Structure formats: C-alpha cells, structure tokens
Image 1 (spheres, rainbow, N blue to C red):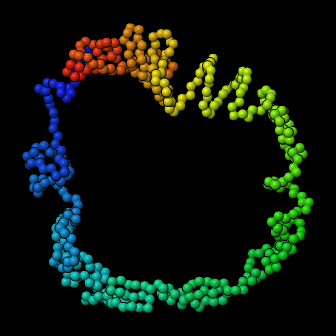
Image 2 (image 1 turned 180 degrees about the vertical axis):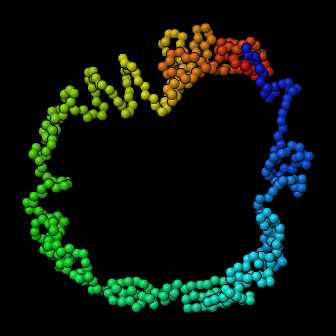
Image 3 (image 1 turned 45 degrees about the vertical axis):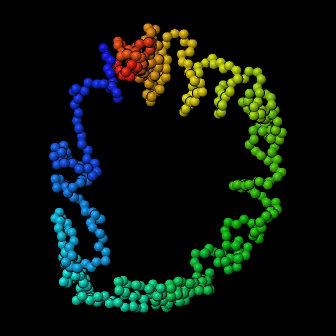
Length: 438
C-alpha cells in the first residue's frame, strides 16, 4: 500500500533534525587556502595557481621552464665568458658560464681558446684561412665572392662560363651553343638516306606529294583518281554498300513503305496516315475503340474499370469513396493534419482500448493508449512489445496525473487522476504544498 509524501520546495517547512552532508572544497584560480585546511581536507592532485610563496607545498615537480616569465629582454648587451646560463643536465639543474660552453662546442674545424670559439688551423683551405684566431678571408672573384658573413655565387656568369667551354666546341648537323641549346642545322637531314623505318613509296610521296604517289604508298586504297578536299563534294552514282554509320539529317526522298525495313504490321500505314483508327490497327493488346485522349483534364463517361491506379500527384474525390476490399496504407515521412481532433474507435459501440502504436525494428511496437474499463477505472497507459494487429493490450505502466484542491490529500488516488478524487500528484491550494503518492 502506498502513502502520500510531501515534496519540500522553496517556502515549505521540513524536519531537518537529521541531515548528513558531505562537503567538497574546490580550489580555483588564485584562491588561497590556509595550511591547516589544505592539510586536513585536500588530498590527491590539483591544478591551478596559488597566492604566496608556496612554502607549505610539497611534492610539486616542474616539468617545463617558461622563459617569458623571466625579467625584461636583454637586448643590446655583450655576452662575456663570466655570464651565467641555466642548464638541466639529465635531472640535475644548475648554472654554467658562457666560457664553459667553449670546450663542448669545439669540434671539426673549431677549437676552444680562452673561453672563446675560433676556426682551427686545420680548417684552413681554398677561400678560407684560420688558426690562432684568424677570421675568414674576404674577397671578390669573377663568379664566386666571399663576403664577411656569407659566400655569393653569380649564376648569371658562372653557368655560361662552364657550359660555353664544354658545348662551344660542338658543331655539324647539330649545333650546341654556349648555353647548352641544341639546334638541327638547315638541310641537315635527308629523307631518303637519314630517315629509316619508312614503308615503300612513303619517301617518294614525301618528296613529291601527288595523288599518284600517295596511291603507290598505301596498300588498302579503293579506286583511282584525284584526292577529294572539297567541303561539300558531289559523288556521282556511288555505291555506299553497308556503311558502319550514317547521319541522314538532310536526306530526302526516303519512302517509308519500301525504304524502311523491320516495321510491324500497320505501322507504315499509321506513319503515312496517323489517325486513331490506324494506330489502333497497328498496336496489339489495346482496350476499347474510339479517339485518342490528349486533354489535360479529360472527362470519362460511364463506369471505368481499372486493375490498379497510381497517381504521382494529388487525388481529389468530390463524391463518396467506397472501398469493398481491404485497404492498404502507405506511410509517409511526416503527416500534417489540419483537424484539431482525431477520433479513434469510432462507431465501435463497445468498451475497447484505443491508442497509438509506434512500431520498432522487430515488428512490434510501443503503445500509448486509453485503457477502457467498464468498472469505471479507465485510464491512460503504456505498453511494450504490442502487436500492431492487437485489439487488446496489457498495460506495463499507467500515466501519472496531477490535481489541485484545498487541504492535504487522504486515501488512495483515483487511477490516472480520473473521477473527482486525488491524482497521483496533489497540490494543496491552502499552503501550496506538493504531495506524491508512492
């Protein structure tokens, strides 16, 4: 048996004599917590920033170093050997001087000398001098110039100087200039002697391109005579044979009766005289006789029988629609209904359940329906796994209703809030308290 329970809301009175609560402390950005509280309440890991010097914190390990948080940028200064730098040596942090970097940085071509790095004597060579603190030799050349801090190459003069010395000596039928560009000289190639692979007669045709020489060169020609280059040549009594394709866009004089083959019985007659009777005589499987209908909105008289009707647009029926067989419904994606109310179980004349079933993938569905009981305890209900063809449904849950009246509720609520009793949820209008029956 259930009982009424009061819901505590703003303005309600409740007995809070025995309330157990747990308190969580959240440390946000720039929030300060005393030593005692941090020790007592805070455990585990945390993120954020802290006010103060952090002297009471332990177990905090730095994983990165933010250079931007240091002082101002030291621009325009001179670094000397005694200046110090921060260094992390595989877990050991400390300071070193600039002079200490000289020895580990020295390598091939470099050497340490009095806390400085200089070019070693062994690195001196063409275009470079070094040793004993010597600097790079600076000087300009014809194609390569050694500057104070880089080496410049003049490609405009260097490449022609190299290619000219190599290709400038090549000549004959093929000439290669100083830039490496090859040119075949005039009259350097003879078709009859310098070109190989030509078929018989091709060289003669290339030397003397006449129609006769072309016919001598090809092997699959048809007929003799002059070549045709006219845009619209006139062929006198040609026999076309069986061409693979032809376009008769401007052809005239083709007789349907004798010039076109493969037509069915009566089709040639219909093409010559396209009447409704001739079309009916040409086709097979037609129904009825009479004139063809081309009207956008034709009017049929009498009774028309159709095995099936399919409409791609709207269908309007001015009179009554009588269905003597079984109706079939095709669901659409969304249905918009202008009517304010939908009447279910219309004309059933009996106490029956009625509602909506939403079908699932298994074929059954979830039902929201009115459980109609003759005993007067009718109510809204929901049910699962309902067969769409079912006429009776077993409720899984009942809908909750709310009512309002003066005074606190007593006794059991009416099913689903029907009748004049209490609903499952009751609002006391006297003190605005809320009650739930559970």
